[in-house]
Image (cartoon, rainbow, N blue to C red; front, top):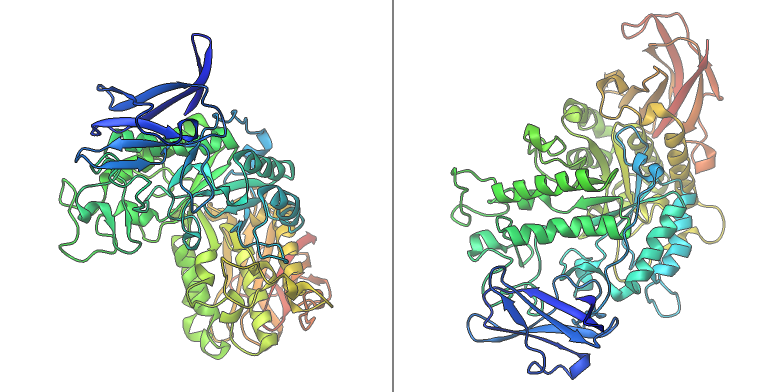
Length: 602
């Protein structure tokens, strides 16, 4: 629906794609929802029904009444509605197309491969709630509270779980019915633009979780839109998602593909969204995803790849690259499909980044072990570097890891309370130094103890009262972010072999790992982790650059409520051969801790 003027008369122009409908009408507040009042005209060459209604204006509710191919009457929301009613109501709202947003040079640079990227993943409905009635914060309240908090914590990007309109709170937005409409739960479309602008003003880029993989079967939405399977495949072996009880888009249909590609560009061009994180890519690109033999149809070459979905993703990423300077896409892709972040012209999918779910699973499996058993699973921490060069990775500790009985990240750590927090701090120190961009789901930055609940606020009360272990973790994450951003060695060459080198990789008996991160100029930062509760004194290892090294971060510091074991700030190298290198350092490695050292000079 678009505002228009015909022969000097102002009103609204409506259009809807329903090629197999026998009749189409606009129904709405402007005529008491009477489908007889405003029948639409069909353009047969395109299958689009259209009508201009004088006097219809912004803010009024409407739907489309379709007599479908089977003679049934269907009342449908507008797939392209820019605003929608608050659930459980389902009408669309007349609303003009937002103005274009021009990305700044700083925002474009912040997405680049050599930039520090530390993402704070947020579900807007449960980050914080009103304490008196447990109601959500609005977009504008979030702009005033969430944005300055994320900036203070040192994050570079905010990632929002889907804000597209969706009927069921428990889907967290991942079952969308209004891809073009920001959810009314937190305010209007203009309120959402206010939130985005506030984030940009604070120096934060905004990533939107985007769900082009499936949609729910609600009667008012896309399912059997004109009485035929218009947006979805007709055969359930191609068009039905068994895991989620949802329908799968027919990517091979030009109109459907354009609907989705246009949506990606819409969020970026009209709201200033800086990146899209594409949900459940594996479910899109494999025809046999989560299906047994006989439950799926091979492609035209007899293979399991969904060639139409692959071409859709390539086309989407091509369009983003050509039309939205500096914007990027990220894939949640759970298989080893080759070339997710390689250009389409070389056979890749064309995304810029991919979540490293393998790294996440391996490292969490390692960290949950009692330290006495870690020596037998040393490869869980080293394996990631064997394939690190294959994609441009993001290291994700996402919402999926703190729900459905998986426990919180803190609660997965072994030992007593002190050891749980020490393990978590050591893990974060390892993660922030390891090659790849960073992602942390809300609550993990202060070590929330319980699983995430989308119907309640985070446990901010853990940070009330006197200084405690939760404050310590929060201070650590803040320091990790600021230190990571300050030192190019920690982010400039994430995807270049020159940016990483093992110094100690095989000391599984003591569960010690040491590596060096390097920037283009050759500056180095040494990262040493001790994943046992035993302090390692006089631990000697070979180094590349002799001189004076300063401890710039120690997760065992008393500042983070650790035991404060360390190296007194500065250590000097010795001309003593170790690990095949002429010079070496002798360090004290604190228990269950990670330390970072920076070379200060000769």
